[in-house]
Image (cartoon, rainbow, N blue to C red; front, side, top):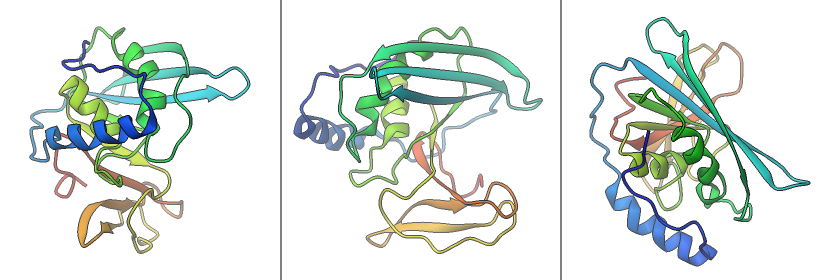
Length: 194
């Protein structure tokens, strides 16, 4: 899997914010999901002692949920941890892992936000635009906006709202557990798919 767009990762925080604002115009919020056969989940973890980051991608068959392919990559972290600029820290290793895939996913679910971001360009948007692939952001905490507590049953959801704009949903994925915050990353509409 190869990106359709790349940029340098060697940016100062102000330059990274300007790039996010510029690239946010490329996020497609209309639904371009056809039959989803392969779904990939991506995540990265950093060892704070060494600043080595390990990224993993798992591709599942969307119908059977069987693992089709996995890939991992290691990268030295060069961007500091800064809220709102998470993608500049994690994407270099995730991109490296995605490039190792033989199976092209129809949808990527990211451990990070999509448009539920102050500049409407979180990690899921960044990844979706770079690879021009449908992507969804799934964060464990709210970065921007407010949401009421959803009901306690799996599938219960409430809008996540920022400045009178619905930017995602607080979604209960299992009964009686903390909700996650999902938002559009690129080339999909979440509302009718939840």
